Image 1 (cartoon, helix red, strand yellow):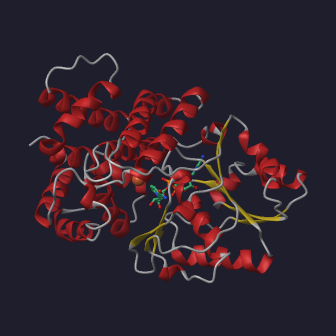
Image 2 (cartoon, rainbow, N blue to C red):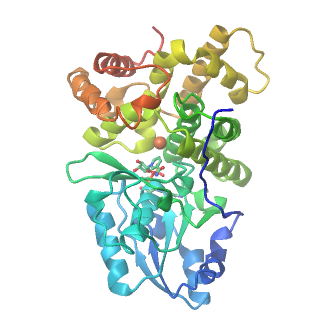
Length: 391
Ligand SMILES: NC(=O)c1ccc[n+]([C@@H]2O[C@H](COP(=O)([O-])OP(=O)(O)OC[C@H]3O[C@@H](n4cnc5c(N)ncnc54)[C@H](O)[C@@H]3O)[C@@H](O)[C@H]2O)c1
Ligand SMILES: [Fe+2]
């Protein structure tokens, strides 16, 4: 067997209402003053209420930082870390989507070390220490709660990653009640992002391994069985629970077999057009799968009956086509726009986007099952603009 390493958080609590248990969990770290990292919308929706009450009941002081901004800009992270240092914070809790989680992961690190954010972009450059860290996702989602990754928007709108095992939290708390009010369009977009994590992990060229495969397969089964349900009925707690579990498992898969061209092509859409991560993924996903098909046909075929239980396998070619068609159908049924034009992208933007995608060659495109150059990236965007994934 090929040697492999697999990293994941050691402590996970999954329970409706679990955010009420945060006070007790923090006591395990002898926390006296917690920074609660969230955003205004999430707090206004009451999603931090139970956790805040539990922290107070445990006799732990708290400072709330609700200044998280979508896509974790570097200045926001630095400001929150400064608040930690000023207030003598000794533990960090995040409640929110991937942006809040990514912010908190770096805040817990920067508050404890003299390192500067600018110096730790890349792999394993964050090597110091961090504060105890508890992550509570409210989207299903990025899987950020289990990955060693934080994605940061730099002042020139580039997305850069800090990757270090230190960013894996001490506790992951999945409380599906917190996702009940996620609006349908965000439910769909974040859910498709999670599916993309599982698919890209399963077809990863370099680090795909038997462990990441198991997580990816279970994640895809859960996500595909429940995404349409939660899109049409957000109050279905069981389906919400399975989505949250699926997105965490997808996170475990891609934390160990990283994502590839879908993400490389999605990032420039977010960087240049200020489009949310999930939507930018959903806009390119079927088109990248179609491009990858010649290299990934057998693997896509293996996923065909995972996402469509009862589907009768025929041949790799037919099954891979059925797999891509079902992903397209999920996107369509969940209201994903059929063309890049829906977010203001036109023909004249395609070269700029392709150039942007190539910036992620080293971290992401190396994992893609099929090699991809600038012209091919542009051609994929052109298809996503025309709204036709079939050649
Ligand atoms: N670290 C990782 O491994 C990793 C992986 C994938 C993506 N990401 C990053 O995560 C970010 C995207 O995260 P996201 O897709 O979870 O969205 P997000 O955190 O950017 O949130 C999107 C919006 O949803 C709102 N929201 C979140 N939860 C809600 C709820 N339960 N009810 C109502 N509104 C809610 C937020 O207030 C926000 O307005 C991007 O910056 C992306 O780069 C990180
Ligand atoms: Fe993603």
